[in-house]
Image (tube, rainbow, N blue to C red; front, side, top):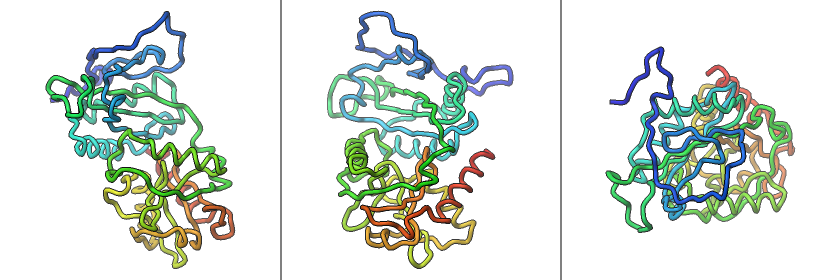
Length: 316
């Protein structure tokens, strides 16, 4: 049974301390760093946070991750992120190394140590450290690697919420298990870089004529019939935590919702388009491949979703 802290017992006591082999070498003392990082049971200075070169994350991208937004010093939608983490670990056949209680304590401790008011907590769990072999190592002898760190940055005061964002479309080159939040993100980083090169914020990926999702976001439109549309869940997209929250807000607001694919042409002709992501919340899309959406300005539906989501998140 996981240990449950008493009122007088710090949450840090929840977290097991283990030592893992490391093949990282240092030429001298580490320079002082401002952040504290969690690595396998220990909170250490950023400069001292190291993982073995034999970690399967490095060799095979054999791991999963979650990014949780922080507002007012509190993690947002953490239960949803932990549930999705469980699913990703299960699909990858990686035993969860920490309980939900311990993971909540980990997030709280990192946020407190790094004095994060707004920003994100990044959590990564890999299959662990073993000599290079395509076959999975025995989990009884190879414990999972757990790494987490924070990034402080403004989330509420996002200029793109006012101006809207430009999106380009690209072929979806990813593997077929996009429902797993895997650390294998090469296709997404290539797409994001191409979007930047072409003066856009995001790239929406297209497969079989339909938009699947963004490189780091869920794609939505408010179509010509006044219907909120987004891809249905399946192996082809990530089950976005913010996506789920927006769909719930839409249902509460009495809007028509269709989890049904849409084409690029339908998106360009839509009344509005917008995207959702953990650290971006909701952002209006004002151009797709250079074509304006609606009147080319952020629409009222996207703005209202952003306001409602932030309002709800701020209440905890």
